[in-house]
Image (cartoon, rainbow, N blue to C red; front, side, top):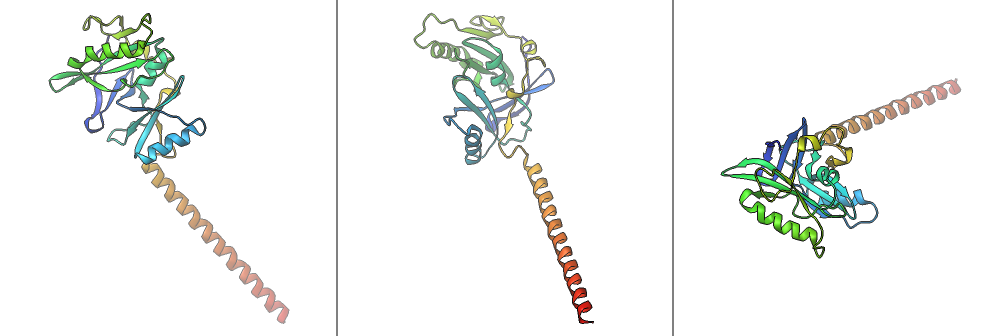
Length: 236
């Protein structure tokens, strides 16, 4: 498996951005189940406004899950969610182990846990040190199995590095251009526009309203002149 290095990092918000096949993938989203049955995007945007979040990825399986990211110095809009992409493209209950490169003295990883019904396990999209990785995978496998002791949980990763990995994971091949879909992308939470775009739009609306007001004043003046001319004509 190709070693993937972060293109950018935001340590404060635990956001990592990876580049694969010239596409940008975000790691470190905060996931929650969206309980609203109707107006789902309205509820997601409400959460975003309330908690001052910037973008969201959405995964729909047996439940609707939303992964949020706060505003960061990095442009996340238009990026793909690595967790949504892998949960969608892998099959069955499984775990993907993805290297994020070196951070300090330790290698950093993230995990994607896919449930039997295609949902995203809460252990997903977190950042893990190599020392904590094996025990976390053991705990994640147990959680994915639940009472189904016969359930086979594949672990995708680099088998040459970890003996407990069952299948090789080639992210470059899996995340090809043909495999990527629009619903893997992060969506903006503010009217679909960046703050700069919103300011520009506000300025354009203001100019438009000023133009309407000026045009109205012009027509009022023209009507007043017409009435004055009619009055003078009648006086003569």
